[in-house]
Length: 115
Image (cartoon, rainbow, N blue to C red; front, side, top):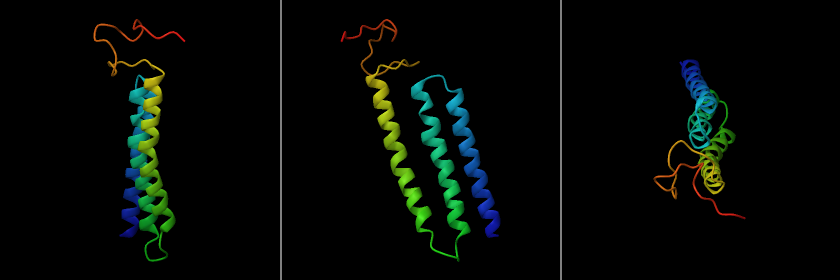
């Protein structure tokens, strides 16, 4: 029974990783591409780490896998936030209006500050 649970967790984790990779390739702009690796892939790796924890039940306490999972779920949103902020500061083009954009101007024609 334990092997079935581990197999299901690995399949679910693999599915989320695949969805994240496809999203990274297929989504059209930088801000939309942030969702692929930060949302779906985080869940995928989390599912695989959970499978490793379940697989080790009864043999040893899986502190290593728990710490990896904790680190992953803390750092992935922070890195996505920082990448998003860097994209906003660099004025990366987007398909949707971003905060601070004029409603009638596209990003290509918006006035920029000269440096």
